[in-house]
Length: 268
Ligand SMILES: Nc1ncnc2c1ncn2[C@@H]1O[C@H](COP(=O)(O)OP(=O)(O)OP(=O)(O)O)[C@@H](O)[C@H]1O
Ligand SMILES: [Mg+2]
Image (cartoon, rainbow, N blue to C red; front, side, top):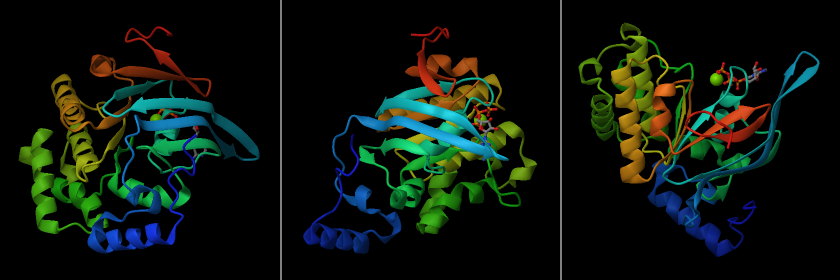
């Protein structure tokens, strides 16, 4: 397993890291991810991940030993019945939730608690199931929120955010407040926001749920293009049969574990 492989042990290595921090203050590197990235084949590698939630005095096991390996440049779908743990797994991959046990390695490095914030800010783009857009702000300002958190240059961030909004078909809604938009338009704002920091790993929780056929295809085209041209990796939770053809692999959560499925839904 990868745990501990990229620890910075020597004083010289730590000094180098300090120098890098001074040159790139806005990138917020954490120790493991500031080192030169190894040519690891896996964008995601998780082993025996378990997660339970407490309900009153009872512990409800949701993930019971999940294993998953996703290559860089793959587009993987995660399916399963409501309540099976799809969002829980995605949140663990997105460094939003910590597993109770098991190992998580992202982009070739074992994830440690001290890495979570930096990974979320700079390497992972997350589309939440409930979108979590900020009411009262425009589409453009919503998309810019992650860049403000990182401390990026506001002018160039806005130019980039506008470009992304146009790419997802929202050129006419750039200055509209999000409460003036339809559900599908809000979903596309959330996708643009997830992409604004140019993440290596895109995690999307039902990103086409509120979209008509054309908008759904537009969203998938943006994702496919990013994956193909920039070797991004995407894991998409979905109930949407229309995007099955767009994926490289499909996994179903079944009784707390992952099983690979064919495009027709058969067990492999
Ligand atoms: N914070 C929490 N506290 C307690 N239980 C939780 C919490 N989050 C999720 N759960 C429970 O974990 C289980 C899996 O939830 P999760 O949201 O991951 O399911 P899901 O597969 O994404 O479902 P859906 O398709 O409806 O979105 C559910 O039984 C849910 O009630
Ligand atoms: Mg969910």
